[in-house]
Image 1 (cartoon, helix red, strand yellow):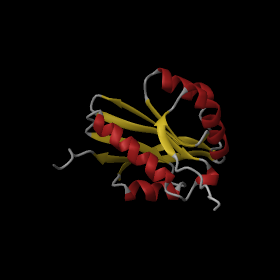
Image 2: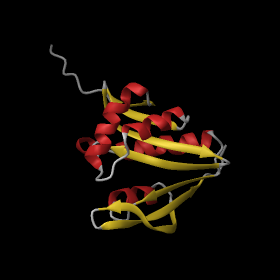
Image 3: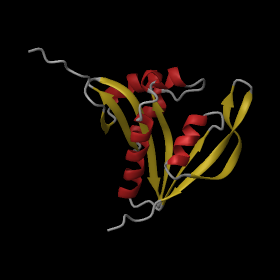
Image 4: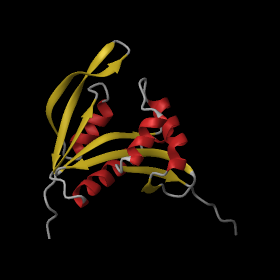
Length: 159
């Protein structure tokens, strides 16, 4: 009998310094104006909640969350293009939401480009609501792009 091995299900784990080259490569491939290796390293050093989604030794996505003064802020979430459309972004976001709750944040904020329709739809589906706009927030090939500001109220879990 021959056993057919499937790829292992991706594992969420804390980001390590050794992950930064892969994380930065995903970021560069995904965005015209990416975060740098140094920014990710600084997030780790600052103690932000930095997580990766890894399949064996390959990092396929990541998320960065800051929490302070009862509020959480999703700073960056990305899934490698070759792994998009499989629910990995939702999985990462749910982990970040759980971490915000664990830190007793009362709400979680994020900014998203209006041109990123898939992300906007995912955030709405997860319960985020649009609460405002930040004009000219993101650099873009055409100059600047506004950001949609979204928030999710984190109610205590029901017993």
